[in-house]
Image (cartoon, rainbow, N blue to C red; front, side, top):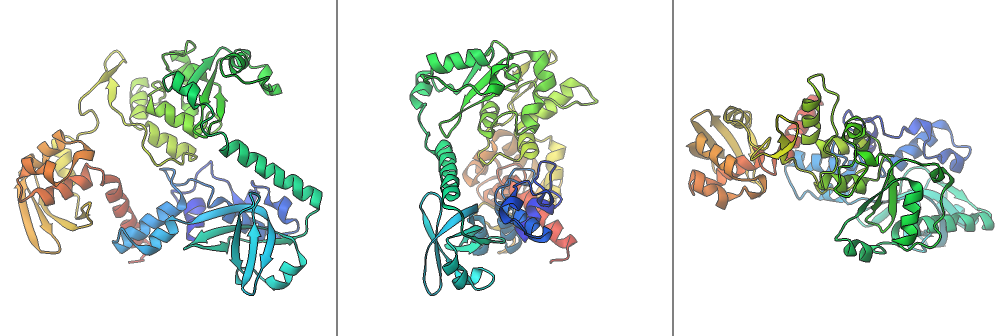
Length: 464
C-alpha cells in the first residue's frame, strides 16, 4: 500500500500524466468481466505501481521507499530497503497452470518460463480451483526470491484457439522489443556512432530505409503516407528504429531542416510530451546538446526562460514525462549565453556558490553523513570560522571558512574526497571538511536534501 500511495496519491508522486485507477486505462475490466468497481480499481493500482516512474526524478516507487527507509533507519545497507528496491514484477497475464504439489502450484508464462506460488496467496480453495481450471489471470511480484500474488486474480479455462492467439501476440511483442538488439551495430559503427538521421518527409525516409539501411520492401503505415514535413529517425538501444516529427527543433550538424525560430516555439514538446519521441532518443539529445532552444515562456523574457530551462533540462524532462527509466545523468549544464544569445563556455558557471551563499549553506546544516556513513555535526559557521564535530568521538575540528570555499571553487563534485580536500584545510581537518563539502556541494547533496526532506515529513506525520 505504501508503494501505491507513493506512485499514485502522494503529493510528489501524483502527476497529470499518471494513469488513474478509477478510469481503468489498462482495460482490465475486459479481462475481469463482472468484477465490482472496488476490485477493478484495486487491480489497476497493483498493475500500475510497478509500471510507473514517479516523483520529480522519474524514479520507481521501490527506489523512493527504499531510500526513505535507509534515511529513517540511518543505515545504507538496511535489509528491508534492499529487498523492497529489488522487487520484481510480472504484469497481468494469462498464466498456464503447469502443475501442482501439496503446497502450491507451478505457473508457466508466455515464454515458457515457470515459477512456483503458494496456495495461501489465493483467496478460496486454490487446490480445488487448480484442478478445475487450466489458466489463471493474475499479476505477481517477487520479493526475497519468493513469488507472491499482486492484486486480484481470476481462474479461467480459455478457448484453445483464443489462448493460442493470445500467446502468439505476447510472444511477437516480446520478439519486437528484445530480439533485435545489435542488428544495426555495423551500420552505426560505419557512420562513426551516429544514431540520429533526418529526412525531408516520409517518402524520403522510406527511400533511405531501402537504399541505405537495406530493408526489403518496408511496409508504409497509411498514416505515414501523407507526412510532408521533416522527420527524424533514431536507432534505439534495443535495436529498433523510431521516428518523430518536429525535426526542425533539433540542432544537429547533419540536420538541414533545423529552424531556430520554429525550435524556440516547439522544442518544449520533447520535454513534456511522451508521444513526441522515445525516452532513449530524448536522453541522446540531452547528452549531445541537441535542444538548445528549449525554453520556458518566462515573463522576464526569452533569454531568462531559455537559460532557466537549459540549466535544468534533464530534470524537467524526467519530471514532466516520467517515462525515463535510466538512472544515468546525461545532461550537465556547462554553457551559458553571452549578450548576443550565443552559447559560450563559462568556467564554474552555475556550479559554484557565491561566498555568502556558501557560508549560509554550511550554517543551515545540522547533522550530516559522510560517504562512509560517518555522522558529523556543524557546530558553527560564519564568514571566518567553521567548526565541525565528530559525533561519535565528540571531537571538534576548526578551520577557516575561506579555505573550505577555495576547495569548493577548485574541486568538481566528483573529486571531493579526503586526499583532495587536505591541501586546502590541512590533513587533520580533511575528514570533517570532506564530509561537509560532499553534502553541501558534492555528490551527496541530493541524498542530503532528500534525507532532510524525509525527516521533515516524518516530523509532520508524527512518526518520530
